[in-house]
Image (cartoon, rainbow, N blue to C red):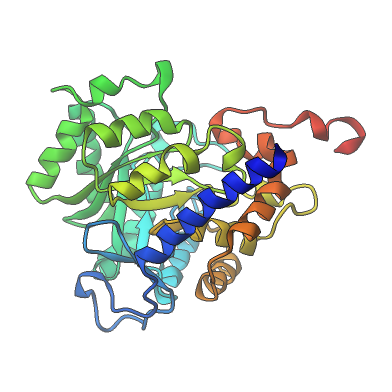
Length: 346
């Protein structure tokens, strides 16, 4: 039985890898929308962003970590500038992102990440494909977020506007999103008015409601949690990724190191393994939050040197993280600390 399961998984991964290859790795292409010719030569392999006609680097900035921290404006600006200097051309933020130490509670924190990114965008907007999000499910609330996002980001146009953190179950009323009072109407209106260019959704809790959304409306992009532990519980790779590929969506992977938990217990796998696993999937790009410039430089090096893994190599990485998947899948609502790590095993 184990051999049958391994062979079935191996064949599934081989098909996904073939899909990645079909996307076409085109290293050192010019910047998207003929952005500033004075910018750096591309140092990252590029992939198509779905059917949008855009090209993005396989590694991008998720503007959390230091970038969303209150009181760290100078460090945040340094990180964002360095990202662009090193060839990153996709930046992801949100109207929600804002932290004060270890706490993300409080409306006064909202938009901190956008404001920090905006300090760079006022000078370098034409070098970046800029994505942000609204977490409000109502038309009026989403429109208020759009107004504040444009102001915070110091721009007139957002490249990708997304519905943030689709959860599913009783926590999510999918029908309301599609209603006359729902946020999708705001997204469509903003695109019609050319304030935003493309529309998307994001989520990390459950692939089922996200699949329902992309089957009901032709969104341009989807941001989903994709890492080596994913297959072991309610898998986005199994249940959502193939649909997104079929619909030619821009696909963004997040939770690559599961907020560094993938390095717990003496190092389950390395950052190179974590990034290479997800970049071997048919994604347009992956986003990672950055605390320090040294982390950014390491990740850039990994992305530059990236070579797709084989199905066997991906299976081996999946097996490495299997004993710890509950700890790594915290964002899907699993136990924070597996029983295997209790007592003397911690």
